Length: 147
Image 1 (cartoon, rainbow, N blue to C red):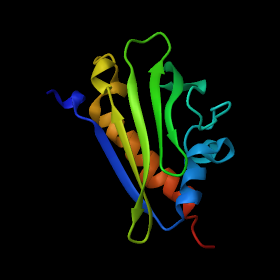
Image 2: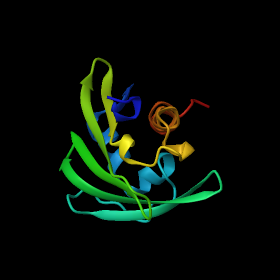
Image 3: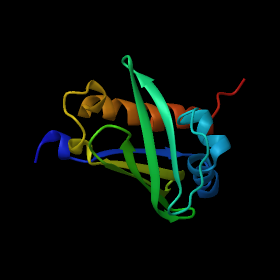
Image 4: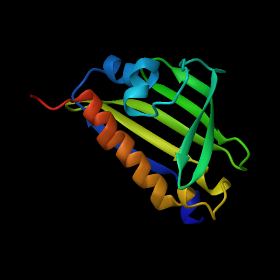
């Protein structure tokens, strides 16, 4: 098993209800504030598909997402691809009960199916990206600093 074939797992506990965390990861108006601002639409329904562009390293990555599983308040699973690039990933967002709030576990699988010569598809880049999104951006969205 190569390093790129090992799933990436990032977890974070938030001092919010399961419902509030679910809304943050599935409601379009909230997702664009912490996840990707260019998502044109989103519905947490099996079969829903969306696409949007992310510019990185002088390249465009047209993300193509399809929802393959949705258990409201608990779990949502994406089929995650990039237009014009080989490979398919699977990203699972799962909400668990935490001791002091709700715990989010994000699992990214299939990294090894994407081209290994693209810097954005290294394991290190993906781990950094998921940690930033979950442990910084989503945290800051759900727990804004007191003024």
